Length: 459
Ligand code: GDP
Image (tube, rainbow, N blue to C red):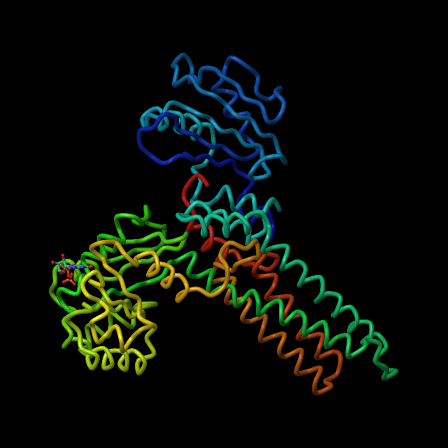
């Protein structure tokens, strides 16, 4: 990909802080003309003469007009986020002032940056690989401890180093095969087949491990959809309030995701549990027992990763519960059976005797709710979210890894059926291709534009 093609010869500018009034606002400029252009607005010092990684206080002026008193951070290429000359102007946080400054810069031949363009340049200049660049967006969007940790690990190259290890092993394999091809006339096998077998076996295990981590990665990134259902008066809204009082998550909309329903979100141990149709719970409209089996309830349950079925321990027959459990099993819907109002004479209830493994709580008295939360976590994720191992959180990476697994399987089959070396070499090249699409060694412009367009402006 040529530099010209990407049009990154020009200089770009954007507000890097959120629009609106704030204590300060940061305007970021990156490119060949960054220092020259800002220098022309900053009469008190010659920025061109200043060393990299320095701060400069002074007035920003166009002609005789003072725009603002600012602090300028200077980063000279290649030691900057984008790898180009970068200037960050910390101005006073007035949208009007910021607009004036950006205008003054744009009039001097600098272009407004597209979303994610700074990070895109960092990628194109080799500062980050694609998987790392994508993790930058994830880090910005992270809203729990678990998502922050996974994104940071990947941004700092955790995933990338796993991949480069896989790549090295594949290249070693391919070198052995290629060597053999050079001597193909002589009908000899240099590459020890059992060694190749081991290598492919190890690679497959590593890829499967990464694929497996996506289940957790997906939970970390997108949360878990929970439907709380049960008869009227079972205590659903009481439970909802008890849970929300302690665990209400602060979530902002992530770019690219639109939700058409209002949802409540719980943060339990770093995982977001998204409660489906909480309005329905509060309105007491549906969720009657009869409606289980009715399409609407089923739809809601199928949309959920887990259904929390709440029943009043003193007002539910064993037959009712058995019917419900059977329905869940038939539909293969993951569920948690939760007996509520266990503060009232729970031992005497027949449900308690018949379903000793259900979770018994008092939503009103806040008893057993901790155990319920633990069960929610245990039922929805397998594995430890607090390890340092790489967790694949990105669907694009997951897809590429799936293709890689298939290609590895082709290689394995080739080995098993003793196909000629040149065919093995072809399959290996496929494997390397899929790996390359994750880290960005193999990309096309449309794909890059798509990935970076999901970033915010100024990043
Ligand atoms: P919903 O219709 O399922 O949303 O049920 P509500 O949350 O409105 O609760 C129905 C009634 O049960 C209310 O009077 C609650 O105060 C009461 N209730 C809820 N949870 C408990 C509990 O744990 N123990 C007792 N004793 N009463 C409860």
